[in-house]
Structures are given as C-alpha cells and as structure tokens.
Length: 159
Image (cartoon, rainbow, N blue to C red; front, side, top):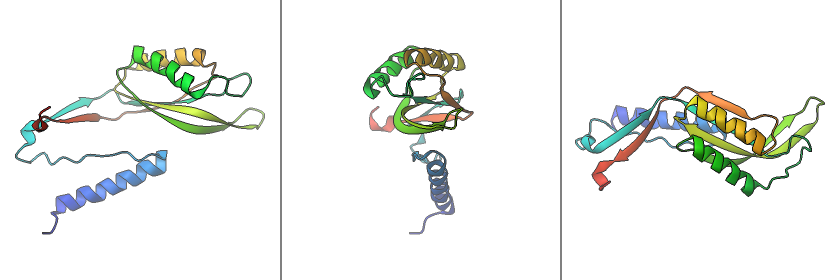
C-alpha cells in the first residue's frame, strides 16, 4: 500500500523540523502529527498555550572567582525551588557553555538550560532575579520565542 501525499508531506516535514532543531539547538525535539480527520478525533484533547517559550541559560561559575562554587546538583535544587514558585512547569537540561570576557579570556562552565512554555513574562523575570542572586551570577541569557505550544492528550486510552 502506497502512502498518501499528505502522509509523505508530513514525513518530509518531520525530518526537516528535526534537522532544523538539531542544527539550531543541538537537541532533537519530538513532533507528533495527528490526522485530525480520523474517526476517533473526538477522543483527542489539545491544550494550547500562547505565551511563548523562554529558554534560560544559567552558567554555574561564580561571577567573582570564575569557578563553580555551588555544586551542580545543589544549583539544580535551588533553581527548581525558585521556578516552582513562579511557573507551572519546565524542562531542564545540563550543558557546557563558554564565553569570552571583556579581557578576551575564554571561560567554559557547566550550565543549566531551563525551558518554560506558557509562563508569564513577570514569572520569568522573577525567576531570573532570584537565580542571579542565589547563584551569584552576573547575567542569565534568556531566549524568548513567540510560539504556539500544544499539549496532546488521547482520551481514547482511558485517560
């Protein structure tokens, strides 16, 4: 049985999106294509968030010594506690970052990458202010994207 042209288009689109995300972020994002015309489409719920996506890049080197003073697991616990007071959910990953200071010195450091989808701007600002102080950071890089995110839930599976 040959795949329909819409299925072929969806597969090509998926590979293109995966390649773009891998090239841009180093991470592969998973996309779910759901044919809305299916007979059981009445069992599918979509929850759409319009507030966009914020990605915070938080280095762990102390801003004065340029060395990591707070252990990574402790820093994760600190940011988790702060984020849980301001945002409903997030994804966190570990990374290694690097930057060149005003004297031309290259510094590499362990970094935390926190992604918030649908969080309010005020919540993100509050999180960054508290994290700056708690981890003794000079700055946090924030990436803001205006995206529409959709949560998918299939009620047909007893949920």
